[in-house]
Image (cartoon, rainbow, N blue to C red):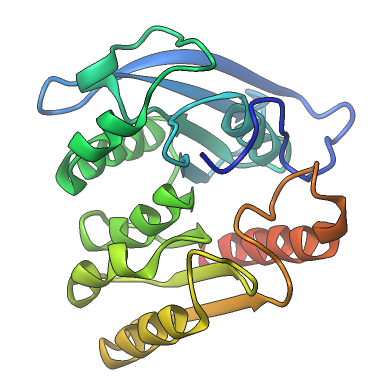
Length: 244
């Protein structure tokens, strides 16, 4: 997984922001029931943008619930969801659970079915501009989501390009890729290959490599990469604003 269980997004809370949040169980069109966490601005707010958060390989845990709250504090409805309803149910799981065998069973179309459910949930809240934001495993599938769903845009933090490349010809963008320049698992050449494929497909995109930043740099515990985290967050919010 990308973050330790007590990690938090490196984003300041907005004191006094009026938001509400709920633990949800959503159901996909294929009958899958899965856990999700929703955070929305105050009921009096005019919310037109919604964000579907795709976690790393561990699925839904505190980091992504906190991230949903940070989006809601800034006026965006957000739903973070869990990947493993089909295989592990909807209950909270222990910290040390063995998720990797279930990751290997998960298919892209299952992920996309659940993304679609989250999109419909946000549309029911009157969100008209929908975005995905994902991390690592979820970063790749955030980009790929534009091949399956009508989205205003997709953001991926240190997603693996090779996982998204099979879907590039069907993507409808725009794409924002926020990569670590010192990521030991994703090379500069991997990023160049992704950029080349997006360019050839005519997809609006921007790929940033943060010099010296490792995989999972977007973490309050990684104080030495706070500048990169701040920039990545500004770019994410700017991307959403520009395409809403």
